[in-house]
Amino acid sequence: MRERLDREAVDRILARAHRLENAASVADSGVEPEALIAAAEEVGIDPNAVRDSLAIERISIVAPPARRLDRLAGSTEVVVERDLHLTVDQTIGGIEAWLTSLHRLTCDRRSDGTLFARRRNDTSARIGRMMSASRGDGRLAASSLVVQAVAQTVGSTPTRPRTLVRISADRSGPRQTRLVGGGSLAGTGVAGGGVAALVLSGEALVAFPVVAVPLAVGGYFLARSGRGHADRLELELERVLSRVERGEQPTGLLGRMARRAQRTATGWR
Image (cartoon, rainbow, N blue to C red; front, side, top):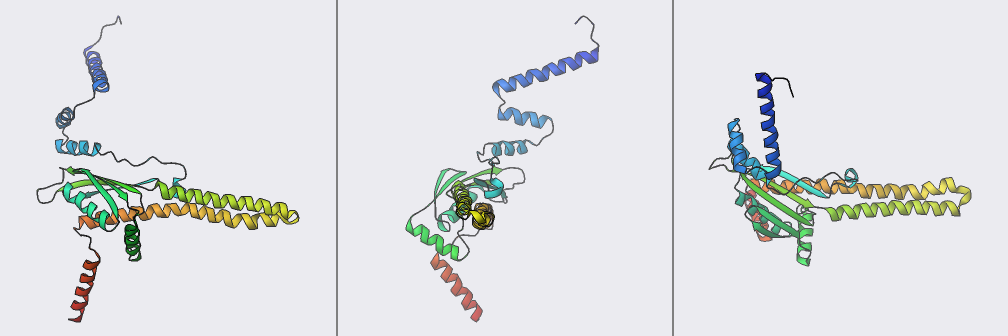
């Protein structure tokens, strides 16, 4: 470049070079969390908000990417997220209590803010789930769950703490069962309709739809029932979080009998 540069051009070029240098250093070595907090504070962002955001960034649970047939059978994973005005320990402890008692899951708390749960398949658990389902509870049909909770600073006070909790429920098994069953039923209908059309060649236009259509429609609705299963699972997870937030504790059979007797005695008065 032979032409001379005026002051504005010099400032513009140097500023751009500084940005390019910073971008390259970030790509090479990353940014320390404390440096990010300090930089955010310099431009007027609440450092506590940045700390909260960093804490959320460490949560490994993310919403699963959309897959083919999700609109038909629902997602392989159901993820719910909510802010609770509880401590992390209260949040994880409350969720664990409901998962182990009402939903008969085996729980493993591997850290202060992380809980892994897996569905129990022993006879006692199956009978307990059947009894709970008859009362409209315990319908958390997931093979495994991951719960993660992080404390938040913004919007939190010593008497009213705030925790962000995310729960991921794996429903790949029920989803696959419905898709395979629906596809098999529809395929059987098409194959059966073809056989009927060959056997009754004179009435092929009538025989094929009579046999194929009902089974194909049944297969579609069987596969589509997966969306309803995903919706019910999400609702059940939300119910668990609502119960934890209200401070409710699960009660066993004796506890329910005692509460029923108490309500009856109160009614007699």
